[in-house]
Image (cartoon, rainbow, N blue to C red; front, top):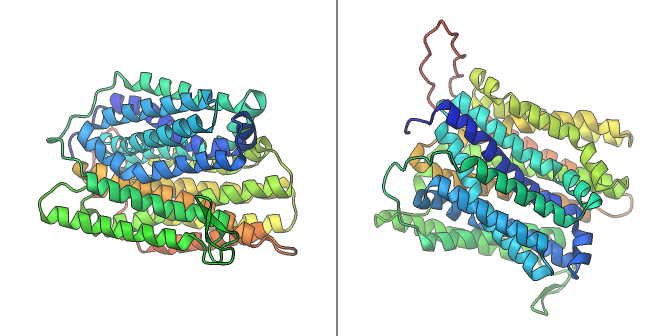
Amino acid sequence: MPNPPSADVARAMILPLALAQFICSYAGTAMNVAIAPMARDLDTTVFGVQASITLFTLTMAALMIPGSKLTDVWGRKRCLVAGLLLYGTGALLAALAPGLGVMILGNALLEGVGSALMIPPIYILVTVMAPDLATRARYFGVVSGAGALGAATGPLIGGLITSLFSWRASFLLQVIVIAWIIVLIRRLPAPARTGPAPSFDVTGALLSAAGLLLVVLGVLLSTTYGWGAARSDVVVAGRVVIDEGGISPVWPTLTLGALTLASFAWHLHRAERRGREPLLHLRLFRDRAANLGLGTQAVQWLVMQGTFFVTAVYLQDALGYNAVMTGLVLTPATAGILASSAAAERFARNRTQRTLIIAGFVLTVAGMATLLALVAAGTGIWRTVPGLLLAGLGLGTMLTASVNLVQSSFPDHDQSDISGMSRSVSNLGSSLGTALAGSVIVSAAHPGAHPYAASLVVLLVIAVGGLLVSVLLPRTPAPSPSPSPTQSPAPEQPH
């Protein structure tokens, strides 16, 4: 890996990178509290607005791997700036949208493509500009904390802005933040290219995009149609293709997605055998630690987004809270994530990433169990605080450690590949968490049942599964403590 930039340059880059991650995560949740007024102002239906939000998720998830590869083709800073410009243009169009068509163009397509271009460079730049594992943990802690903060406070900030001004002002806020980020990074040096620009694997990009789109779409369809028998008729182009009670469209869509991804893997194998530059190198999948780390990432985002979703729906549907109050009740979880993310560097200097991931899962499982137990005993808001705080501390601890483990497992020339894979896995986990929690709530919503508790139990079981995966991570020596000014620095531990 080439020498990292100076400490001053690295510190200057962290703020814009964290802001970029924050705004992408914020956009994924803020609009969910403004669906009704958006539908009214755009003269469309709630379904139309939800379709735009869903298309944003699909576009971002489908293009994350090709977007990451473009960092090698265009350069990392140029790719980041291109993503910011596309995202800002899309947010401005969405803010001024007279109807659903312009909203879909701005929010779903331009913001989705912009996110896919700018998120991978964030994680690549953090990896290559940090001189050691502990410093990298500090930077990843800032970026991961910003992402979690954006996702958690999206409903709160979005609800406040919509209530005080308009949903359009929320998109204008995104434009302002994007403009600020561009100003912050424009004078920063672009990382030097370590070799010639590779060719871009168009076939691989199409196959990966189609496969990921189908997989994420299949997951999202579960919220509407369920995982077993279809809850309602499946209508395509005005025709019923699956009757109510038939097989859920989730499974045909997931199967088609899996077959497409299998074709993508075969294409990568053939490209490597013929000496061509593939979209992803298959050597990524030969690293046991990275593979297990990707699994823990998927579970972490699934559990976090699912828990936030269940809690938010419970507070709004069962207790009648508005979006602002719901965001305030979720504050302990946000505070826990931020606190543990801020301590990421200190943790990484004294503990291995494996230990931190295991500890994070233990805290998260304990927090979810506490939340279940205390809320079952009564409805006082104070009963949610201990569980949410514990879960937040656990999530912040392992989110940073997992991404640090995965990104640090590969040299500079593989960073575009692993960054795209890492972000795709995290997006898939987020989508699955929300969809799974929502489908369990709907399935268990009958007289005498406890749908929110059932959904949280499912997420708790998945979190325990993530804990078991983390135990399988290979053991590595704990990092040496930072030397005092009078000591010679110890050699960097391998990672």
